[in-house]
Length: 110
Image 1 (tube, rainbow, N blue to C red):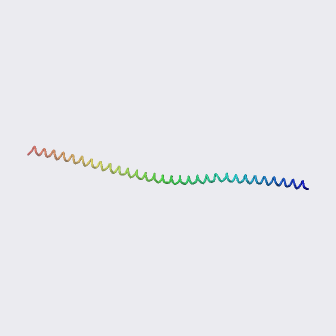
Image 2: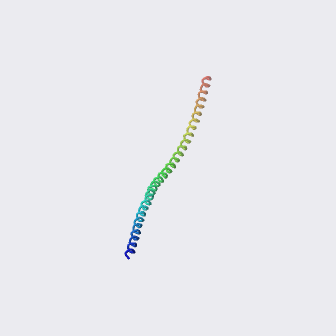
């Protein structure tokens, strides 16, 4: 009877020891598993920062596009203004030359 008791006790001790080992393995695994989650969390935070930077850059890009369009419009207005001034200058020069010519023609008559 004692041998049987001793053998059951040894068997139970082995089972307890294995259980303790298993529990410690599970604990270690849990710690290892929780590590990637904290890393993932920090990656998600970085991603959300990147997303907001991307949205800001898109807004800035649209704004710059609007500025560029406004500049092009201003440039074309300036161009037509210049050509108007050039035409007026030519007209005035022609009129002045005609006036000078007619004045010289008159002075030869009188």
